[in-house]
Length: 357
Image (tube, rainbow, N blue to C red; front, side, top):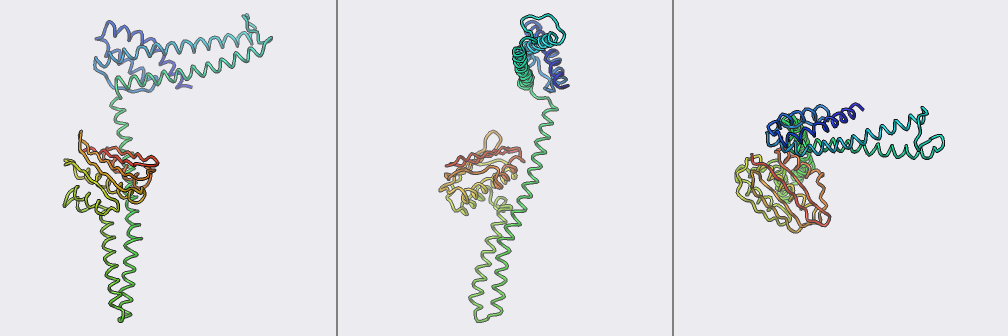
């Protein structure tokens, strides 16, 4: 209730200031900054809208756009006050026996109730109109003045807090995945290797066959360890560079992968993010999409690296799934953007933009 009264008071003041705005825009543009400052105080105090301090040109443009909004708000409030006055008159005539002019509730309750129902509906429309004018005031201020430094700082703090939470979640998910890979893959193979060596010691007659099996099992252990190491961090990124690391991803993929990578000037953490985007996208496509070809395009423009991964599979990829959600958090942590488009029937397009800085 208190907030609503403040909004109404703010619009009443805004109607009066709209006339001043028109006068300033038409005749006294030198005073535009001062008048815009008063408008900013009104918006902040009564409507809870904060905005930036404008230059003279910005102030003139804002006042020119804002004046019709203020006049419209006054028109909406005029109808509200008119409706409330009529409601008071009707109630007075009903309970105080005042003069009657066409509406006699004691003789026609149906007409009275019908009029009351219409009044309630019109009051609801008026309230929605006031809410709309308040929102329009805020949009005009943000569009022509921009958010204040305090608002920008608050938004940045919220963004950083969300990114930090995403990083923590991504690291936790990665640790769980590594533990699962080691437990279900490497550990099981090492157990099998130990059993084979134990059988070879107990059965000298079959030692050659058992040792051959143990040798084969040790090869698989090394492959699994290498796979886990690549998922944690590819050493080829440091020794050979991004292109060589991505070619290794393509070589290990069960689906043909076409990679086009332009020369990059990005920092190492950006290249790492690009690598993991491509690696996870290719892995997901190989496991779930049923694709026959995956295309990877990496370009650098406007101070950002863009990664675009397209497969011709069946589509339906879930952006909130574990792998893609982890990639999104990794990219957002670098102030980048991440998007997944995967309609049923395909194709699936994964796009990431990561700032170079």
